Length: 427
Image (cartoon, rainbow, N blue to C red; front, side):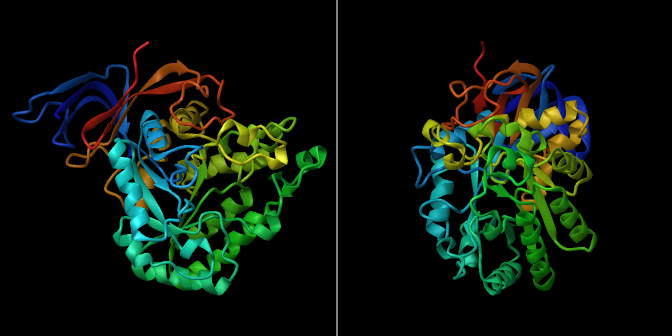
């Protein structure tokens, strides 16, 4: 299909482009800007005047719940919800059931998403077999099957020797290692940030040191092995400082944080509101502000949804028993755009945090509208005001503190691989 996207504000951080112009898609790729290519025949025209045209979003962490927990979500429901959020590619952590520790499982996920025409799923392979933390997975086979990296999700590798060997193996293959910086023995049964709110509510706390000690341990091994490592879900100011120092020393490290961490603090827990039961937990206002600054300075490379959908029953429990997580695919874009409205980021940097930066981390020829690249495009209305609710979103996840909160900025259409994969229904 040949598509002409006319008169939109085109923002492509990878090309340092911010201009009002037309974009032309031909045979699945970006064919040109401004004037149509010679001989171009339009099959579909999208009038984009007043709209923003940017690369399709790349989400570094989205659990789709299938296989294993289909009552919470499926690849069909969540991959289509991703498209409604302007996300054309999403990384799936390996903690599915069965675990993504074989090429068969990895390829099944990729094929399943294609079957339903949803966002492209990029599997993250298991670092250890069954995520057991003891025996290394066949990372070479996982890479050949299409895994963009390896990790152990949120499950710990207790034996530091095993972790070192895993990093050495991944380094030899040139694989990116996704690391969750949480010491499980320090976090224990914690459910909120350890501080005045946890004390007031009588809830078990997760100390800052649960993050910083694990970062420190792993950085020493990264320095020894030369591995490329990505820290998932940084939540503390001291964690940011450790990442910044590692980068200054030239270590091949990167980091992300869920976009909701740039909004919430421990005070949002209120009176045991389980919508704010998160992992990592919302921390102090000082931590939140440090995270915002780190994204602006590039210490934190990317933002993600950290999508973790749940059914109603998973949250309608006592706070300590409620399952952690937010369904965030369809609010990733407006929450990122709000950071520009708040002058935390420039609009170009906000878009980069969910497009070109994650693409660079993953080594993908994506996250850009450069001529000749795959036509993965998000078109959104920057002035559209809408309010997400559990009934109006496409994800099966009923768990988000943003449900009922007015948002600005809504996806009008998502183009994936040159096909119009999602269009907002007109009111």
